[in-house]
Image (cartoon, rainbow, N blue to C red; front, side, top):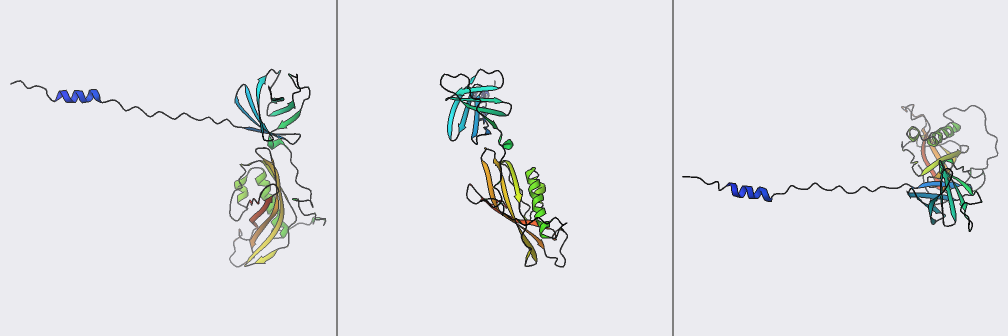
Length: 264
């Protein structure tokens, strides 16, 4: 008797109906176009966005202007909205276009990256500045344990922060926290004369006035003032050499342009 291959029919049919599972389609990547910030010599800030090679979108004082590429001998020149924006390297020139002008007769103002734009701290004795202490500075050598030794630790701390060495600076803090410099294009500090050494619960404390100033990455100025408190152990038995050193216990500053913004 001949056996028919009955079992092959449903198997072949099942194979014919089975389709390979398509691989998932990768989501399209979103390309973020960074803004470039400038500070102009007249105090204005410019935020520039270049969505393509032909367009510049400028934000100046809260107003947005759309400019198109124009002929230039060097650099990139954009015009529109009665404005001319001419970039060469990392600098820009912002000028007004008068009616009928293709190229601005007035050269305008120079605009530079925020890190290159100077900013000055308030003068001593003025709001936000250091105390106007007219007492002559004591030029005598100081010991690490003195109040001036504490002030010197704070000066060292901000010298490290200013140079971007925040991990090294954090070692001079009791909490070991690193300063967050991401919002700033530049950050500087002035420290004043230390107050008297005061003791409490086996520790010694010194307060030192501090003024911070610099620029945000967006170009705006940053000003803050307050004080830093430094602490060390008061020579109690068993204290380690590290505990006997002045360290920054806290930094309390208030921004001149916004609500209190403690940095320590």
